[in-house]
Image 1 (cartoon, helix red, strand yellow):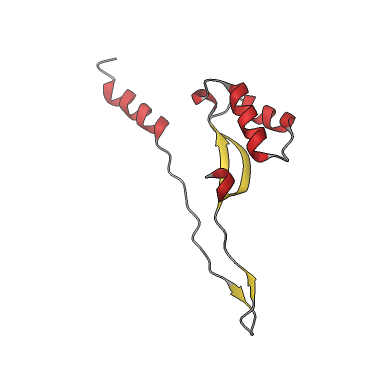
Image 2 (cartoon, rainbow, N blue to C red):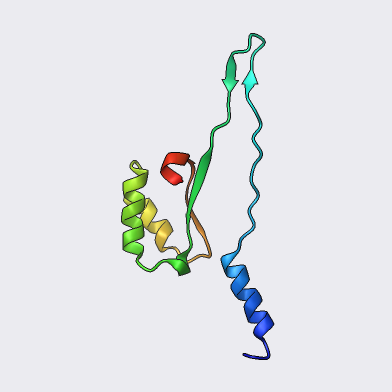
Length: 98
């Protein structure tokens, strides 16, 4: 392990750091009278990282409570899926996801 220290340090760093693209704000779309037709809003994506969960049942309960209308079975399936990162829901209001 001492001989491969640099390799293992890189693996550890890659595990905890992720680079994500952030979409730029596009501004409002208005009609010729200045009436806003479309605007920006800040939203979140809720994801889980399987190997970082200590209590999946607690995670499922918290997500069901916060996301309200989501079906528990759908959330449970995504939380229990063994993957590096699983998206639970996108376009979640900032107040809920933040």
